[in-house]
Image 1 (cartoon, rainbow, N blue to C red):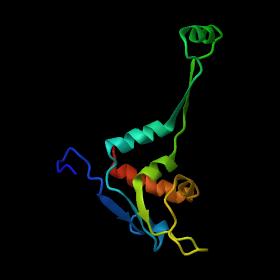
Image 2: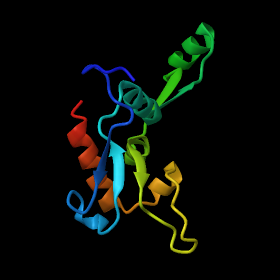
Image 3: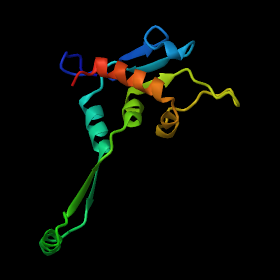
Length: 129
């Protein structure tokens, strides 16, 4: 790791408990203290989807003449994508198996919206970009 104020420490974490997010109760969640430039780039890439409908100039002209765009762009804001980048560990266990719950995008997608919004606010505090 580069020891310089201009670079993020990939191992720096903040443990969030009921003090920051009362809804957590006795549970905890660790998030990256600061997201890196690469994290921000991955988040931006996950938010925008592009479909290129024309691969040649002729196809592009034909689509434009018909009033269509040769490229479709869709913006998909996603709190789950942000949380998946920022969460590095948590104390959640499966009530049926007793095993620790894996941190996956699908599992994060099942999170209570109120908790997700609280986590998003904590991440935003640490990443004012």
